[in-house]
Length: 168
Image (cartoon, rainbow, N blue to C red):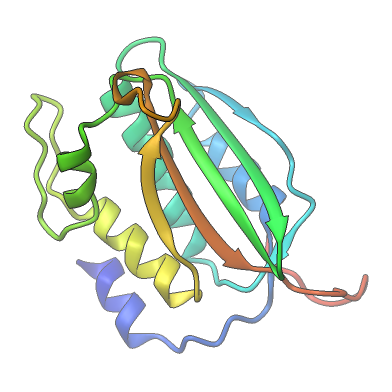
């Protein structure tokens, strides 16, 4: 709840920009138990220090619900002044019905590993705060049992000066 309060109470000014590679690398280092492959982005985005919460929530959920030995991939694609980040895993995936409810507030899990239903709601709030969109999907289209894929967009910082202050 503290994070939700910070999202709604703090200024939405997105300076300094965020070095996406440094932020993602720092988040991956917090999860040594995870088998995480990361394709560097080379991107700087408009966000703030709370962007790390997005990656924390997505990585933790993949590890938590993916089970022992889950593999996680983080990749990106740039187009039209934004970057689409994909975080996907080879866990059990979700049915289409559950994907529709994934970002709802207090959407509790039906598994014994269930949480309180705040993490992904906070993730959606943050991505919207940054002017982006987020959506769940199948890691392999049409095969929900083969893992979950979460895609979200962030606005790119164009022409960042070498001497500009960049967070992370």
